[in-house]
Amino acid sequence: MTQSPPFAAPAPPAAAARPAGFTSTDALLALMVLVWGTNYIVLKAALAVVEPLAVPLVLICTPSVLAQNWRAVTPAAWAALVFSSIGALVVAYLIWYRGVQRLGPSRTAFYSNVTPVVAMLTAWIALGETPTPWQVAGAGGIFGGLYLTRT
Image (cartoon, rainbow, N blue to C red):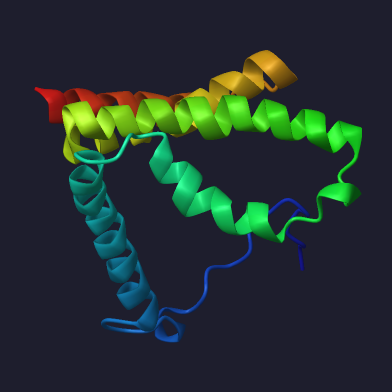
């Protein structure tokens, strides 16, 4: 009897073990899509009267800021907080909400598909991680899909 090599993929589960029909996971995914889409509809209305920077600051930051024990924060944590606040939390959200305000939710959400490609390129440049052929193929698929939806 021969043994399979240690790197062999496990056998797929039997077809009978998979649930048939609409499952609770399907319901959660459908709810997620509904909430995600509703988010942009509500945001478009809110951004007509509110400055885009105020939305993430009020909705996301206020509860955490009020609950934080500020005396326990180290200088290194303060530096990380400033970097994250200016980069990811302020600049990125400001650009995103300006896009929702000016382009509309559908056109802005279109560009969220580029996020994995940017993450791959950032990891390649900043961390020296070489993209795999599958990642490059995935990036090509993303840009192909974007091209098809824009034409």
